[in-house]
Length: 299
Image (cartoon, rainbow, N blue to C red; front, side, top):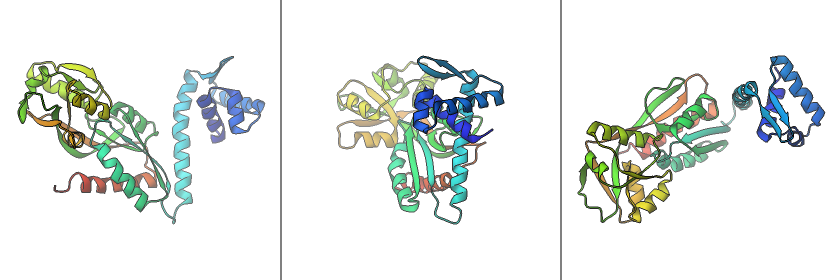
């Protein structure tokens, strides 16, 4: 199977039109159709459904599209690594970060370290839920990710970086001391991320053990918006300690310990079945040093 045909197929699916794909690829539309016909004949499956609105992948086409993305990305990584043997490390590295996590504190020093140590590596950083990042790593669309470790996941390897306690973040008028029991989470209006998020799962589990239900009045996925909402007195929230410290800095917000402690584990995830490119290996090793310097060093 020719990788050129795979690349053509991927581009057609991306733009959703043979005409637009022909323009983008600078290939005559009949020649483009010939490539797709040859690919369909080789696989014995219809890959695209054509209509006046454009083209859409069939079930077989969607499966090929997912695999083709991985194949083409690995091919690019291989070519880049072979061409650069004996020269300075270069290439693109896709790094995922879990939102509401200490990972965002690591991102800036990591970007600076990569720029200084490996100026020819282009680091592409994105944030998303752990489930999305896990799937992206297994499919080869993300090289590595810093995310909350919710337990073993087939196809991924987790290297635990740090363990953090969750804390209550509230306004100055909230009538609580320096430490509260888990039961308070059933009494205070809370804004938390969605149930898909590990922080929310950890809070729900702690509340289940205590035999209570958290009083969730809103679900917010933005840390910045969460901070403004808590400052406005709309509700309290629960965050990892290091994230809370950054959020309350320069404000009148309070950070209150929860007992018994609710812990979350931040880990470095990598795919177990897909080899990392040389550039991704360098970023992974540099990330470990950044974590040690930024988060594990004595305060």
